[in-house]
Image (cartoon, rainbow, N blue to C red; front, top):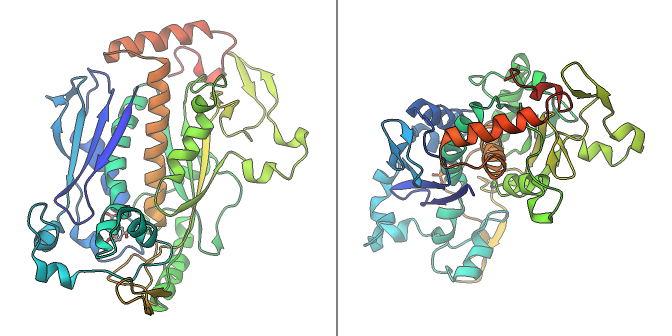
Length: 398
Ligand code: EPS
């Protein structure tokens, strides 16, 4: 079973991702991971922190000579900003004076500050909550997702993502197609499928910034080439649609997850909501993909289509009312610095958390200690479906 644990604070020495269950024999390059980390950092509307960080992975275990060993894969991403926070964030000895200057006692509505303080008794300093609640942690999840992508890529799975809406500006409604998201340029300011329209969006972000506001939005992710039969209808925990929703919803600020045309299908007649099964050339094909690549919690060989809805970032330069937890008097919520929007990063993050969930289901179905075992299991299954599997899954098609 593929498992992922992450650790590390936003301004601590580093973030760590530990992946257990990666088969031995998987070749990896630094670029496989650093490329995804750089994609995550890109995007207009980020705050000052992104000028400090230049995320690069350092491998602490599980890899030798660029090939996985089958042991836990330990990925570290040093925080460059730690250099400025060492006195406040030292694991052994905190400089009281420096910590006092960085102390946070007025929780931000929408952030984990208040609920986290109640839960872990961090009333004295909400920094003990926000350091770990920070979306900086997604760098670790992306590093792990990059490894999952490298594995899935060997079996023909490819990913696309992009921004479909920013605040109230809706660029594309409904589930995105692979072809639409293929228009997204990673170096465009907001990673939308319409780079020519992004000038207007940049101005919209600038205006929000000027007003001390923040913006959310919608991103779409499509995974193409996913084999049929991942997940299971036999037990609720194994339903892959539920696992995808959990993983995507667990990305900070995501408040909604939709698979395929799920949102729109709720208002349609049944005949308009499902996807006809048709005879094809090398197997079966589907007349449409409203289901978004999953039926009964099992992949059906069509594109897996996910949308994530992000609320605006909770740290506001014009803060909402809050209460000082020491004096219990009303005060504006804390503000240090903030992103105006992280929507461009969200598409990359969701791509990578989807890659983790798909890789976990992939390795559950095609289990093997070495990549060769996984390849053999995959080939045998592919053979079993010859003639009656999804057209795109036929041997030689990938
Ligand atoms: C974040 C607050 C900001 C963001 C951070 C997420 O960090 P800081 O408090 O250092 O200004 O920049 O995101 C990242 C550091 C990152 O790499 O994505 C938050 O509160 O969630």
